[in-house]
Structure formats: structure tokens, C-alpha cells
Image (cartoon, rainbow, N blue to C red):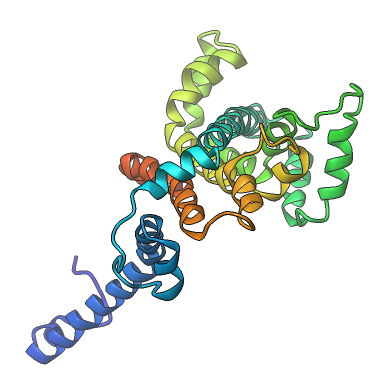
Length: 292
């Protein structure tokens, strides 16, 4: 079956049409590449430039030479290494607890399906329409005095991990994926005597690698760029992530060193995505596919 497009086969054969169409595609792709990669390339260039070059000639190619020492100064002088470790620790906790809540919640609503499943699903979906700023004060008061425990989670990573774990979008995403899994497999497992935990651990999880990869990527990206909530609940400088540390030093740090620190903060997730891009993109495609 022939693929249809905006141009017919006869029109594509015309030399003028082919040249114009190819040039248009190349121009669009070039614009997309500039918009997507331009800021990252400029950040990489500025990270090894002097402050004078950045301010006087932002797009110049190192008029005063390359200054590799900016990266070392940012790492040692601004204690970026500790902030980077804190960020990784926070992201790892967000990933673990977020994945735990999303998988177990999705499994309960889509596979176990108790009588109140529809009510819970509607309540979870309703939270998506509440702006985060609206619930910020109530969430902060809850973290200061956890109901039932009386514990104060300020200056504790639990104050970041627990709110991040209750992510309604991830729960609904996993629930919709689980709902598309073949029900015959679960029925056969129950006939063989498997309990709910065995079905979840031995059947559902191995079949859920695509959605696990998608939720993992969303959770890690969200944790890496989170700023306001860690700023509120982690006032101790020893616990703060990169996003908060960069904000606090931006007023006093030298421009070249600050940009070098920003480049260090950006390069790690970028390298991580480039290394595993095929797995993430393949999993995203499988997660979005409708299974019969």
C-alpha cells in the first residue's frame, strides 16, 4: 500500500518540486536542531570561556582562549560535587518510591479492581486539576507535622521523597497500561493457584518493562529539575540539590564559574539519556501501543 503525503508521486518526480521540498525539509530540520541543541552548545562553550568573553561577545569562539579551569573551580570552589551527590540521592529516592506507588497503585486499580476502584481512580484524576501552588501551603504544614506520627520532616529527604511518590499522573499512566495487558494470563495464573503477589511479581512486572522505563524517565527528569519544594523543606546547605545551590550562588559567583557549574548540572542527565535513548524511545513506543 502506497503512503500518502502532501505531494503525489507525480509531483515528487518533478525536479523543481523535489529540490524545493528537500530544501524546505532541510531548513525545518536545521531550525529544530538549532532550537534544541543551540542552548546546550552555547552553555558548553561558555563553560570554558572567561567572564569578559561571555559578557562582551556571548557568541564569540573564545577570543581570550579556552579556560578549562572553570570546571575545576566550579567543582571545588562552589562545592558542586556535594550538591550533585545530593541531587542524585534525591532523584534515586524519588524514582524508587514513585515507581513503588505507581506500580502498586496501578496494579490495584487495573488488575485487582476492588469495588471502590472507580471512586479512587476518579479521586486520583481529580488531583491532576489542582495546581501545585494551591496545595503548597497545606503540603508544607503536613510535612512539618505528619498526621498520626507527629514527626517533623524538615531537613530530611523524606520531605522530598514522600510527596514526589504520590504522583497521580504516573499512577494513571501505569493503570492504563496494566488495563491493556491480556487478562487470559491472569486468569490462567489464578487457576494455577497464584496469589495476588505472585501475579504482580512474576507476571505483571516482567510484562511492564516499557511503562517502567517511561515512568522512570519522567520521575528522574522531574526530580532533577525540582527547585521550589527542596528550597522550602531542605534549608540546610549540606542537603540541598544542584537547583537550589545554583540559585543561591548566582548572586555572588563569577559568571564564568557559575556557567561552568550550570554545565556540570546539565551534562549528567544529558549523557544518561544519550546512553539509554534507544531503550527509552523503544519503551515509550511500546507503552503507547494498544495491545489486543
